[in-house]
Image (cartoon, rainbow, N blue to C red; front, top):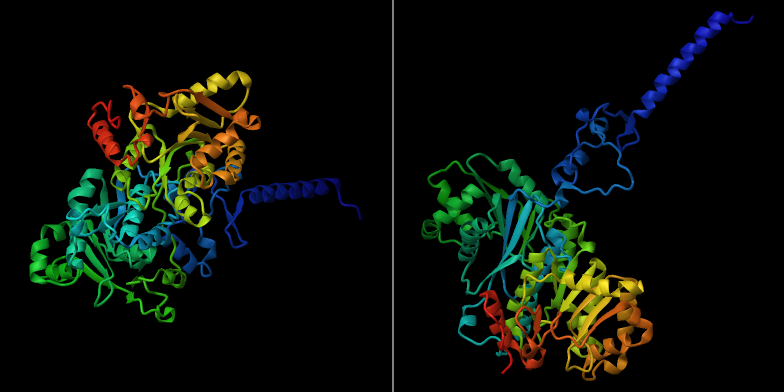
Length: 574
């Protein structure tokens, strides 16, 4: 029997309404990550966004993953073109940090510091230097040397000269350290000195605030996320001390209020409890008579050279001296890096001031190397540029059978992809006019070349009395032309060990007509960006002490005058 028209109409209308409701509900559903749908909040006010990159949240979510999958808060999907930046990547503009990490280290433990940077903070090299710390942690190596350095001419002595050269390279490449030139007799003194430096010097000068201070040697592997999580559990209003390792302490952490008291009572702590480390001594000092400070001990183990003896729950492994052991321990403990540096999304649009940090075996520039690098770093910071110093590319030339100065080409090729422009300066080239912006030179060259409609990728100078360019100061743009150009330079075998070396190779390539389109050549110019001492005039930008033989003495004199705002006219012309 046919359905009455009126009833058919009502049924059709009801079905239509149901379809509309279901369609609306479906469009307001999101997935919770486990294949189940959850309601999406109808307004932005109802939405909660959590930074799940924090280890505490990640551990919590993993622990409750199977029990309550539906309780996980949904997140609003982002467009595919949107760049996602986590909280840990954002620069800290508040000056407040959760944890200050102090890492006492002998000056000889260069490789240990390299592994600490990589393992804990994810810093593999200095090509993209840390310009700003992120919002959670800040760290410093507290490097100590030998008092005998003050009594002997270390720059000409053969005693451990190779390590001294490597140390100077590290000091030019990084700024994450303070160096004290003294012999340290025990850990009580060393860790106490580090805490005193932090409280009385570093924190006031940097105008920062920290909640806690963590100390461990550079031979110690720590699971930083677990340590910080443990510290949060014991923190109270009066303060806490947390230690790892017994009877030998491998790491110590305390709330900043307690650290201030340790520094204040340091002599009394040492006198009453003359132990190996100041944290254990402070623990006894503050608990007899009892204080309100909470004292806890974490899981720390001495490295016994057997990975099977390391418990997976261990938070700290101490006295790991062989670097081959670091990787298996990191894997066993599942140590995740805690980024210490803020992301710089504009780095590829920036300029890097690039120089050599390689100290030659003759130690000629050893004494002037650090001040020279600091001159360039000061200039870069003043204008918002990066400063990059490289030694590795020079060291590898020892194995390639070429003159070491060829490392300059390798360094340029290594760093170029990370920036828009590189401003290469030899170690003996100094910024005399710190106010001069190198972009003015780039704009001038581009304006003069603009009529030809060609992109400039290399800006170089030939001084008036030179027969070819001087490669001690160059500007290189990040282009395909530059990559092909320097690949071509690398093939000039005849100049590998022949006088003029990489400079003659560059000259030979750039004077080939097929490469001329990418070069802007300041021909016969002594003042734009590469000035020798005898041609120097007041206001010149870069003074280059290349003709000075071993230029350490005039370089140091010029640096002193530049720093004091004095004229460098006549320096290095004797």
